[in-house]
View 1 (cartoon, helix red, strand yellow):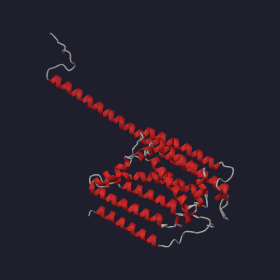
View 2 (tube, rainbow, N blue to C red; view 1 turned 90 degrees about the horizontal axis):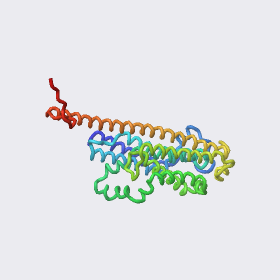
View 3 (tube, rainbow, N blue to C red; view 1 turned 120 degrees about the horizontal axis):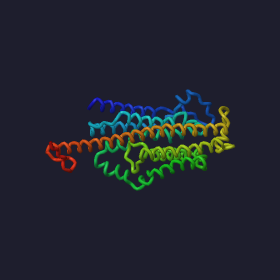
View 4 (spheres, rainbow, N blue to C red; view 1 turned 90 degrees about the vertical axis):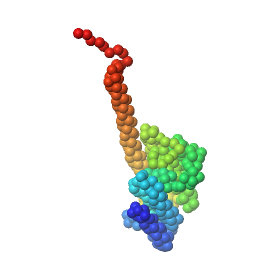
Length: 346
């Protein structure tokens, strides 16, 4: 076993051991009941629930990722999986855990502003990081030919994924779920029912993965966007999220009875908390889309430069061939232009 593979196996074993410890550890840091204390910086750093239903799948996913990296590197030693891909994927899983199991998840039904931070993590941060790791690409690299043909490729080529992956459909689905959950009974129900709350989270993450898939070119996808179209695709999502944020921010009264009726002796009023939540969505969403849009513009410019350089190389090659043909014709005593050479007399 090579040194890299030994390190990967060691990390995978450590992750599994950590998972067993966390599952066996009582949930001592989580608070129960409606009267949560006022959060502090230390709360958001150290107050974790260590929910096995979150940590066991997360750790199993990371162990499976490292196993896949090991198989892919062994099958394609000349094209090993870049370490940056693993870092991106691990960061994406870590953001999901922060959003769902840290104090961010603990206070999501107490403060709407905290809930909004959670939603931004689930839609704008974790999904792009996961896709930057290229999980589908890794699955194709690590899978055996039979498994690839029987399971992975049929899913990638399925009609459902092809239709959901259409950029227009993915864009509308992402925007529609954001508006539909914030301005419908679903949001209120999610605060009272854990199953609906978990389903809402799955909708956010799933729609976000579909939305970012045509833009982040690390995975095979049924549809691709050019760099210019990617800028437009992402740029148009920013204003709709801004409108949603302003609708929440400018509401004259609390939109959700759950927060209005919450009993707490600290923090802002329900309306002030709602305005803060709208501001977080507004500023946070615009910032993420601005940074992504800027990166896409840079990628677009680089693509144009590569295209221009490719054309220049083709023209240079054509000129070289023309000069070579002309030189060959001259050396053979034939005119290069297809007409008789001029004659000179004394």
